[in-house]
Image (cartoon, rainbow, N blue to C red; front, top):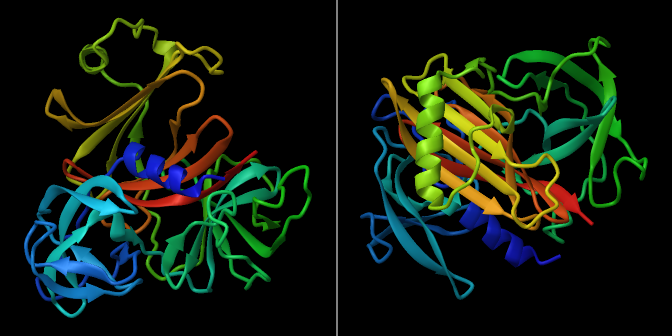
Length: 362
């Protein structure tokens, strides 16, 4: 259970950057999905880690990322480890402006009950808890990575709205209770069950408890991309890998071209797996996010690993749950003997990692 090691893996291998919301200059957008996730986080005057501290922000402080976004790459020392990240320009409800290190920006989920839940289907009418909203901030829900994770003694009754892959609302769960069958959910994984509004088989992938700031605006999604984009992705991937791999097999690629309904930008996520089950040290996994600009692509993030003991990324949903026009990417990360979940938010050519947690392992 090397929680520090896993946290370092999360920081180094998950996407990082930032997002923002257009608002009146003197008003914090009530649909903002950002809160300070650390304790006594410095709000700095300039985009330098040694810059003057304007104030220290407490955990749970609501922030808005100023649009157009401004950020600068910096390194900080955390537990004697040098961590790469960005200082991001933000604004508080007190109308204070300054720069915050991106690892201290968390995902705001203003649930009507506390704690609130984010779940995903596991088996028929069994749902794995992948995130918990405590004081409106999504936190780790797994004991596998965090021995001090929130332990739930009971459930406050609420309804959970289920979404399809593109964020469209699809079903609803009520009469919540814990599911304690160890064959499905062992002691490190919290599972829920309840009464579905519709018993018909539906393709929902994520569920959220009732909230005051979620509107579930569907994302415009396309899985069949243009041939010139395929060629460009393969060419750019070969350049970044600097090695010869067989990347032309369409069956080994998954593509998601998408745009939030209120958004200005279009994006393309591409996933490549040379083998459906990783058994060989030569098995290749690629996860990349590109910004679509006219008829060309601008690569925003590129991640690749070989072998069967490194983390791989899989998109489980692309949503715009607060309707701000900036998509949220929900991912499952699988390692050799563990799995967990992560959320990033996109705006223009910037990416912000706002949550990682849940999951478990053996």
